[in-house]
Image 1: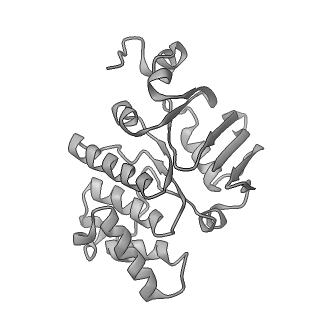
Image 2 (image 1 turned 60 degrees about the horizontal axis):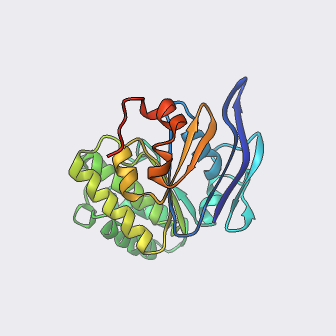
Length: 239
């Protein structure tokens, strides 16, 4: 469904993403991991159209989306969330999700109906009339997902949606991710919580210093010496 080929992204003399190639099949959950500064979010931004690559191509559902821009890519059915939720503090949860739905319809009433549906999916239907500022960190992360879902994507990019959450909140979010996949969603996520990744991902791609150093089933990747050395630490033991 998604194919990244030999993508490079530079910032002046710094190569943030260096000749990275990867694929995500339809219906798959793939986790993108690596140390801070590895290039994960930069690669996300290239895929989502926030940043153009300096070299290489990105294809989605068999067509090139390289350099199309985030609005056009979202319209094609590829949505993304942000590590820090990008919410309008003066809006309610319903109004926020409605903004996402308006990318698919010009009807306010239809957009509100879509928004109400996705808020129910993420477990915020009882908070739909509350302002974003009143939500917990977990609630804001779920609302960020709801807004992305309201654009009616076939694939979603989740950027560290579990950061800052306690263990029960992480488990509830993992249940949500599994449900999205069961409903036909393809998912690529950046995540530092290794236990969460082991519980939800079909495959892991590891970046280090802008380069891909591993790609495969979670338990195989997390025992590779290069991954342990670059990211997990030599004292890491896979449970």
